[in-house]
Length: 147
Image (cartoon, rainbow, N blue to C red):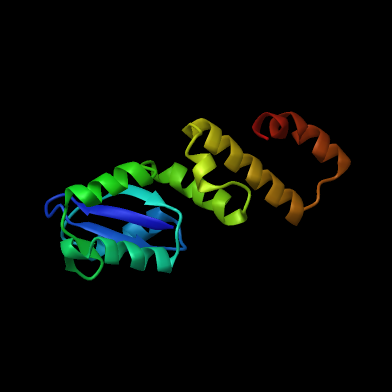
């Protein structure tokens, strides 16, 4: 997942990549930052996409993976990113599983995305821990709502 964080005082924006939960990554980065970091967006992507973004915004480069705030960069974040960290996690999981495309998920509202994610989790649990017929019957009304 590609994530964008912004320092509240410096206004610099970090373009990063993580395979972990974004919240965990922010906590790790916050520990070493004198500036309060806030999540501004995320989109699916890997290290190649991260490098492409670094290259695209190179004229605004500050240091490391940090970039000075610029209209082109903030426009990119507004146009191409999810701005709710929890929904970004759900989207990342659904795209990584191959169940849905990022483009399709962007057409849905946050409740629909979360419902799809919960159904995805139920299917994963069923694959790992097969249910008895009785358990399946008990869960059926809940899983039908979210599928």
